[in-house]
Image (cartoon, rainbow, N blue to C red; front, side, top):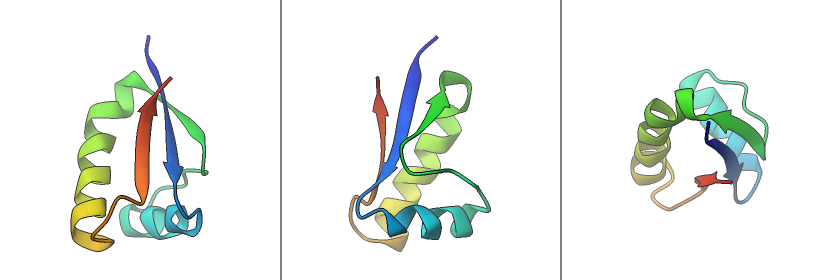
Length: 61
């Protein structure tokens, strides 16, 4: 099983991301590979269309 970590830079963007998608992720929270594909698409959409820059990252550990 692969583990990923979701982070926001600056950290207040995690609150905006959670509000946008009705999630409750914490900055630096671990994400399982079962959730990765769908979450990655949402992160990409959020970064491209909402913040217009990379504010949310999902990194493989």
